[in-house]
Amino acid sequence: MSTRFLPGLAVVVPAFDEAAAIGVVLEALAAQTDRDFRLIVVDNASTDGTAGVVRRFAVGAPFPVEVVTEPSPGAGTAADTGFRHAIATGATLLARTDADCRPAPDWVATARAHLAAGAELVCGRSVPRRDENPTWAQRHVFPAVVRLAALYGRYRKAHRDPAYRTPYVLIHGHNLAVTADLYQRCGGTARERLEDGSEDVTMLNRARRETSRIVRAEDLVVEASLRRLRAWGARRTLLWYWDRRWRPPTSTEVHVR
Image (cartoon, rainbow, N blue to C red; front, top):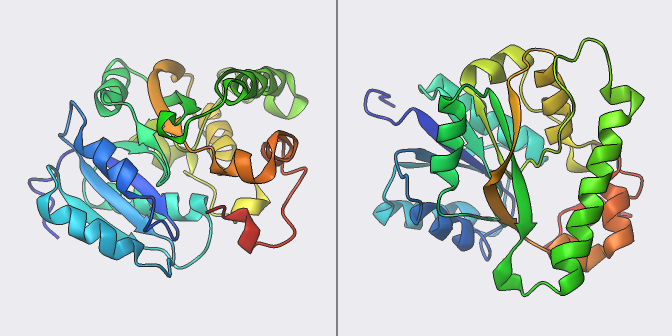
């Protein structure tokens, strides 16, 4: 594929069996105020026609769209495949969201602005998807608990190694932006199964060893799906995010649909 005229910013979206849901993120990306990017959807061995939905969208999309296949399971593995494909084909700036999310209309523009201002890794804010009709507790209480957990994370011994060049911040795999240079220097996203670890935290800590130019950007907003919280309940969901202290009985149940 010729890279001569491809945009320098690539948006990567890992997707596993998201044929029924991925339309939301595709529509949100098509509605961006800054559409000078290309979209790379990584089909993570889907069995439901996810790739076909994306290819049909690509026909009239306002930006270039590619579908890349990653057969090994794991959002981190799929994201890494997408990021490395983007870099190999000329991308210098990278952003990631997930197939069940809805980025704000200025998401790409805001990510680009932070990177242009000198940030090498931008960690954005996650809020519940409004179209899923969140309850008051889901809109306010659960996000507050997540923020408290992130504050705890800053003071954990594991996150305070003298080799880290900047303090720990809250990161969401479905809402981040990073330079291609830092991604390659730090080793990128962990290629691991979803139930084995938080690939976004692993990448953050890898990056913290390489740079101090990591920012928590409250103005970089993505609306995230509530389906895991509603399927598992608040306690199990929080324990899942807390170093996988609770896991579903089977690997299949990890992927909530």
